[in-house]
Length: 137
Length: 192
Image 1: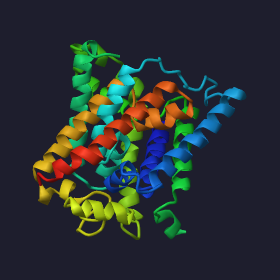
Image 2: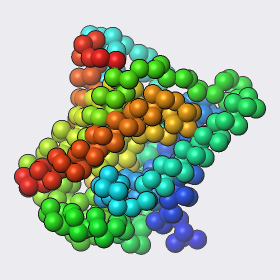
Image 3: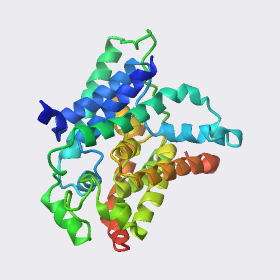
Image 4: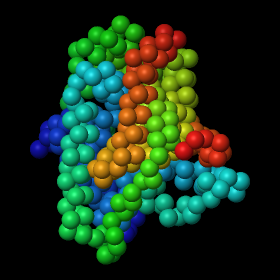
């Protein structure tokens, strides 16, 4: 696939994240305070449409563009890594009001301090890689 | 037409569009997951020489870096070229609560209505700002990789594929998010 394809899909994603207001710190606070249906509507619709599409893709054995299998790898089951990692991620998400996708979208909106969030998140990922063997998974 | 594009969009339209992004990437033979790029960034910086977790072929992840680069441009387009006609319309309960902890409502201050000036405006730099960007970012990067994915990888891709681990991760996201929004954030905001 051409480089331009991924740039375009990414640009569409950035546009959608802005117009959905999912990049807004305010929307994330509102979600965690259960004071609006907006974010639940977005995520819920995406998951329902996604689940129907993936079920159809499996049922009818849809292939990717070059005839290869779709990348729908099952995730290894365990509890600690998903729960502990998820909790730390949730703390950061609610504090900054941004998860990894929106961080980059906000950079495009000229929110320069989000650049520090991005750098710090890279440092966090690096620290995980260093400590990985000592953490429960 | 222009008004429809400039938005804000209804949540159902946004949800369908996000699912469409996931399907476009699946059709291209890839998978939707933004936080992987943070690992790739470590690899490009040379972390793979010392730590095996980062010893991956970053070229195989080039498509994802391009996706992220595109999303920066998408944010630019959506904000500067097709600006939303109104500030983010959050509920009045949330506005009242945020005012009570010293955060202005969307659109009350100059600059973006998507994020509060109290935490993101360069002119309002404070201890709260510093904690937000440094600690918040660190938790996102550390937590996402420990959990093996973020909102796109687990909440959208994983739940769509009916993965139980992703459900556990999303429950974790909410435990952390609720603790932050209800308990810790009010304390941090006092540090302004």
